[in-house]
Image (cartoon, rainbow, N blue to C red; front, side):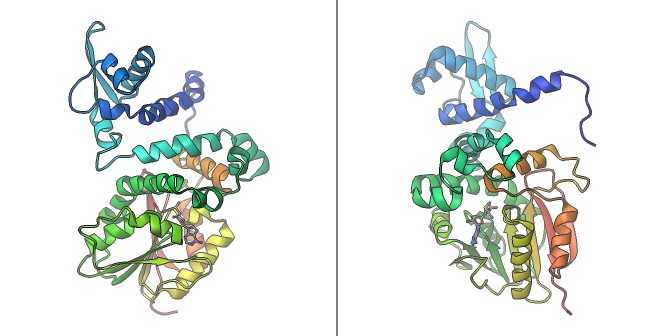
Length: 348
Ligand SMILES: C[S@@+](CC[C@H](N)C(=O)[O-])C[C@H]1O[C@@H](n2cnc3c(N)ncnc32)[C@H](O)[C@@H]1O
């Protein structure tokens, strides 16, 4: 049920939510959470360490207290600040689960693009050109700038680690599948996790564009590189796909129009061994399109960034069934990644 509050405070809260975003982005930009790890520190110590204005830093620290990322100890004359467990786990740059790269990309890329929503809605087109004066983010910006590319793939790696991998590993048992492909693998984090989880029974191919594959290799553990993991560089819309019985497409078809998504799914279906399965990770809209809010917000972001949108579970099911897939099973997680599993029948 969509929110039907009649309280004008809701409007205040929504219209100022950009300040929530920007406080978090500013804190990450300054690496404030790195300063607040371990023991409590004063605002002056933090300001000195990050070479910033004392009043500015104190204001931001107090804002972060109100947002639940920082805890404040002592009284107003001798105040110490320290991370909450949420910030320690997910915002300190060195944490194994750090979402720092994701926050940075949201601030540097998504936020400016989203400031052009009104044009995206009026024109029904992406706004990367209007925002950055360059065509598309993937083909025109990050291919030409390795630093931006690494930031983008680090961001994908961080959300895959925290949000996507647990959905794949905790909800499904893929031990019956011998050959898997992480198609449109981005940082390759899901493919790596599959190869580690099923190291004795499965070989995994990580498939993406040459640039993405080069970048993803930087996120692989050199010392314990799994022997059952291989990389394929290619264009999944044009080139042949690896012959597998499990394909994982995480946040790939939401980047495609219905026509292109159908084309890719048909191609996967044709290549797949009968009895094989496809797992899609998507942020699903409710079937009645009334929520969840996060999915709708991400859908608006997709429109402005890429000209596409998120789909409902029913819409994804139709897309899959239209290409021949059966036994479509939708698992809603309430997080960034919902899961849709479907199979290719043994008999046509
Ligand atoms: C939104 S990212 C998702 C990455 C990853 N699956 C994840 O969930 O973190 C989409 C990925 O699809 C890849 N991709 C898009 N079009 C492609 C194409 N034609 N051939 C190969 N990869 C493609 C992009 O390079 C990018 O890594």
